[in-house]
Length: 222
Length: 159
Image 1 (cartoon, chains in turn green, yellow):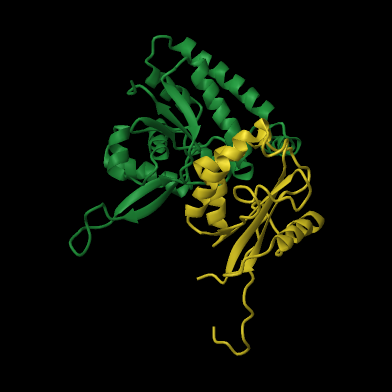
Image 2 (cartoon, one colour):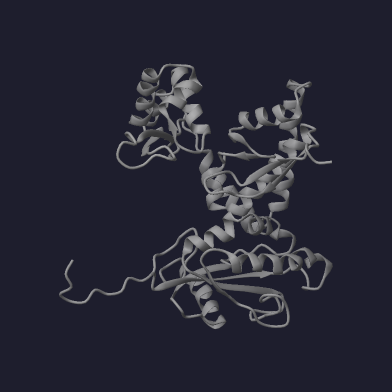
């Protein structure tokens, strides 16, 4: 399939809802869970999930639900998970990735990391201020979640912490980890500052397959 | 069990003397980060010599250049520790405060027979090889890794 036809597979609101749900979950999602989350029946969910799988946007695995095994435990459940491959379309053709790689290399070579972090913090603060302006009365938790979601981080709650399922700079970070993770941390520190959410802080704490930054909510502290 | 382990050397030109206030943050992190390395999955050995924590007192490349060397069971366990563990990644994020940028490679990886610990001379010659010839089976990087040597098959071996 061409990149355009893969992305076109998402051009259906129900299918897009299903994809977004599967994508934001770290573990495998069953047909029933996805159907329920999207507010549709199982058969329709199965149809859409299979279209997504054919396009390579989601992957399928079979697993027994926890606690079941041996004969009589039933068929293993079909579970869907976001596929790792990236898909890009740009019209007219644009190649920001190559520029980003070159710029990252040069920052590494010249040691301009502190400047990069400063710039990133400033940009993060601007986006934090904008988020706050758009929703002045919104509770801090919701403001942070929606700002992170809008920027593609796919936040989820883990106890007192907010973890991030997706790294928006994934491949670039893989090639220049301390540089890009440092930039990312600065962006998010800036975001928290700009949004004026003093109860939150950000730090580096990678987990396999996730973004390296974790946000801690100090709301429960005295 | 793999017949080869992964060795690494990295060097850095310190911005100031090890006991200066400028380097205090770096020196304060050495002991905890080394302890984490020792406990990390796949860790085999690290260089400890000279009158300071880890290898921080050694100056084989000149007065301002610090060295660090270790051996791991495989590339992934080293990569996980260096880039995917919170404390070390954070340490690296702050490196510009303590080390000058280097226009030539400052980190080299190579394979050693499991159980053998390479000497610092060997490590430095691997870095020199990387700088002269670029990544190859004898000296490589995380960006351009090479697999461990494959033992030659004996004649007449059945598939």
